Image 1 (tube, rainbow, N blue to C red):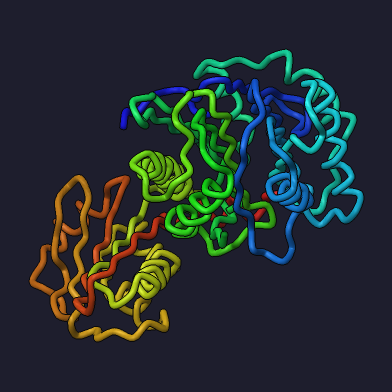
Image 2 (image 1 turned 135 degrees about the vertical axis):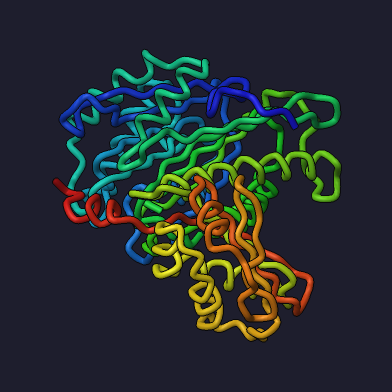
Length: 408
């Protein structure tokens, strides 16, 4: 697998762009378009929040009922959530206007929105943006970056990744972009993720892949415990690489593609967790030697969502008791007197707990390790062979400041 530039434009036949249409009433980009020259198979996973936004409802119909998909149009600034039938009609209008500009079917257009809940979309502004977007489409890494920047809300940086992998001797490309910084606790953040590929792959198999990988990546991150109304992961694959179509789960091509897609979604997940609102570091929790995979996931997420633990990480305080405590109230059956815990970063690795009791570790070294931008806590439960990793961030004063006046 080779790491390349290009984001959603890395795959053959895909173009993208982003611009300021005026939704945010400032110079920030607020609309993006991703387009494939040919029709695509598609896959998607969505928020499990019962309060789901109009675009989620629209996209479910496209992903699970349409013949194919070919474009994704996105706005930031307004989520189009809790907007009733009027909001859904505005999704249809966005899709229809985009389809007319691109010369494709209305039901081949996926729609996504992110931002403030409860506001109706200003369709006069949205419409003007849709008229401009197709004229600016390009296939370069710079064009992909414009799109990645246009979907940001409280994100501090755009989030992209792309790879090239060889399948049956043919180079295949997968690229993606995502946004998310606050309201991140996916159960499928405000979280949106868009993936493009030129692979030839069976649609049902692709959907199965995406669902499984999302469960081990995006569903293992948390910033603040809030599952958004708009969470969506959407993937388009147009087959333009020319590889032998991936149809068999037992084939080498399936494994190569699966591993590459896993890498893409995992890296994007970490980018979201590390850019949590107000965060100063990416906090990774690894659970090892647990009885079941499900238990390992529950334990890892219990630690990553503990506000006390997140605050300790922010303070560079090796308060390991908070980690063990969070494991203890997770509901998983384990023996706390067998648990070993380490802290790790680029500054080194330090065992701080052995068999449920503190080691004679150096507080100074622990503080040095916890002061880096990527901090890892490793817990060995010693009761099985399964493992899981969750990603989050520290909890800072700035998180409260950002969310105390988000609408203003």
